[in-house]
Image (cartoon, rainbow, N blue to C red; front, side, top):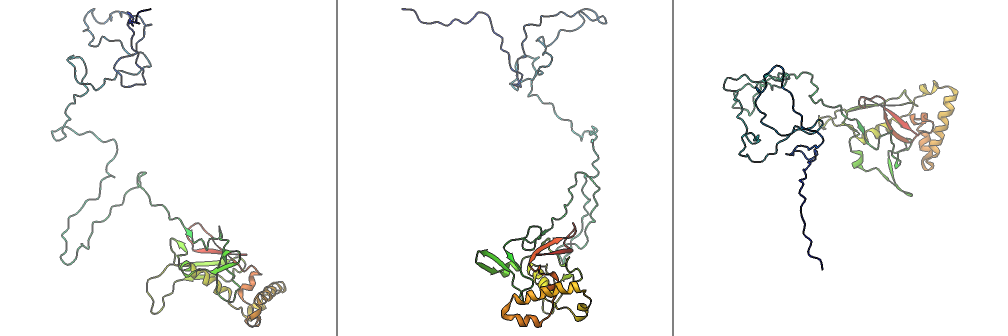
Length: 319
């Protein structure tokens, strides 16, 4: 039976080679391939005139990380650097010239505040210090331009497929499609929503089929109502379009049409009258209307912006 195993450490010491990725580290990389080289003295100085080096350890190899002392407590060795020893900062009140800033700080100074005596009859002084105009600077945040948006019921770029609004109908009744056999009028809450964002107070709508009859929507003050202008709402736009299409044309304007236009308008007029058989005679007695000049394209499909700035002029889309 053999005896127990006894571990005997090797007699030759093994140098620990620290990794340069584990920074900070205390020991320098070890290289057994570079022999010690005794440098000859400088021809400009006498031999032995230089003091001995305070750090006789090996210098770091080229391409390796530099020597970084670890923040351990101070040792008794006077040559060991002490990372915890901090020198006192210089006080700028002691006559030392402060450092010159690398950038111009004139633009960063706030406006000078002028102390004013408050009035006893009001909480605030009517006179305020004038605001200074800041120069153009790449660090000044400029206010972005507003993002113009139109209500989803009026957006002609992406028209709603569930909105049914017949401009030739004898009554104003925009409908909303809910199921296969179910349509309901658009609620008053939806019609009372702002038409655009940001809100506007004047709008002009032009249709390419009838450019001679633009639609103008503007706020008009009425007796008994508030003097503050209200923004244009969805219902205001739809009502203005429907009322414009229901206007009858004059005999003088009918006389200016050529035979081809008379035939197209008469065909649309007859189709509109027969679409409501229970009140066909009543509609026929009202005569030709502006909606007949759409040539059967009487369904509202939204509005499009004609320019990139605001909603000043909109284009009416019908199908």
